[in-house]
Image 1 (cartoon, rainbow, N blue to C red):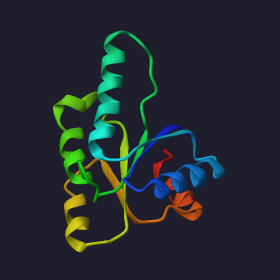
Image 2 (tube, one colour):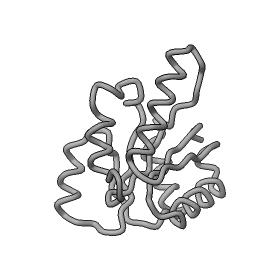
Image 3 (tube, helix red, strand yellow):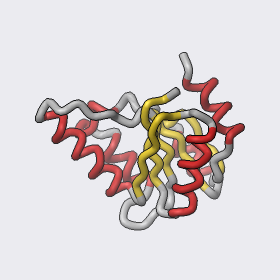
Image 4 (cartoon, one colour):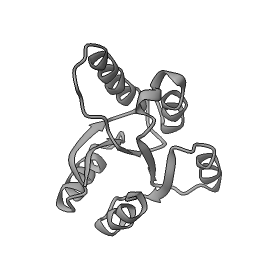
Length: 137
């Protein structure tokens, strides 16, 4: 079981569904959410600040990421998150959860080694079972 997952999506219903399905399946102890990439980066900046003060905080081990969001979309989030500013969090793996599976997006996702899969919304228990097998050593 993962300690913490971050779900980034602008749709509150999708976020609620993610939390419910993940908690029912015992996939993670904690699910935190962000409504866009900027809010997610803010979360990581707070973690960085707290770590600089020697405060121990949980880091998300897995990120479910929507691509199309206002303020800051998934691709822009990934560009920032994979930069040297966030290297202390680069152990987190990303699952792109999108409502459309555009071949261009699939090709672009392959350019980010942090992305381990590209799945279609909504999140389901069988999807989490598949991911458990994929991320366990």
